[in-house]
Image (cartoon, rainbow, N blue to C red; front, top):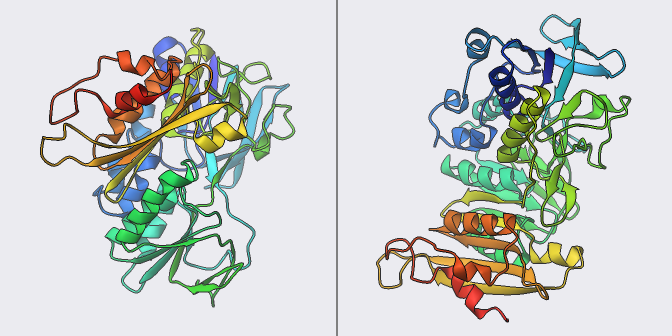
Length: 444
């Protein structure tokens, strides 16, 4: 059986390794447009900030390891430009030599991930304007952030924007963040985002909210960002306005995609075209709470979907059970966690809901060095089923978010939270965990 995988990072290599484990006679070819395989993209901001000492620390396995130890034909600098679904042929360009190539497949996995959105703004090609997605992007930023770069402007207040605001600050840069909406971190409700705004201010990050970037000015190199309201002087720009699935080359294949370009897959990671699978940040994910195919590109899901795709390609039946939209990030001294639906999402889906909010201690109140946890739960007004939770604080955020994510996955009600046997000792918790305190207050 000849397996071809397009993309050599999270989903692609999780699939490749699963195929190798499952099919001893497998011929596995991976087509990677870059030069590095299997690296942790989520660690890149911390490489730039110096928290992670070397860029090599985020590389899980080298290309040579895949080739020599696992006998995977791991190709580099191979840009795929077409898939012939009738002849089962993948074709493209070897970018180092500019030579065309063709590879035939019995089973094909599309795992090319997503690319940063680069708006068609005036001055977008000026030097000093960056995106952050790859190791090359990381090295370019590190070369460009020199002593003469005093001020950095970040456009977009999502994961990358917030993490890079912290890491540029660690490098001693003045940082401004422009967000077209009235809050950063739109995956949180406005009332929860206020804690993030306060933390930004406390750490010297200027938030410019309610303004839309429209272009840049400069002579060869960026010197100002132009918004719909005014102009801001700057020495370097990081674009963090979102990502889109890297699937434009598939338009003529008949593969079904959503409006964002994410490939529709079923629970087996199959597309609507025979023998073609998709996984990771170029594919949809079934959302258990929303009960729809969603697009929330995260590394955890990419690895899971890749493993499941590889297993099914090799003949082992495994299904992807879905997501509940769990994520967490560090922002200076705060940890920001969420899972399930926010209040604004519950409104968007026209669900009857109620909320509970609390400020609670991260552990027993009499034990020293406790920190405040800000928690918000959303649950169904009639059924009391938990719909989502948001937690922001300095300690114990990950513990509560993971408990809530597990409860959501198992479709528990807010009252069911009272019955959970959660760990307790004064340095870690109170006898009633904060989320159980909230459950006690919920209406019967």
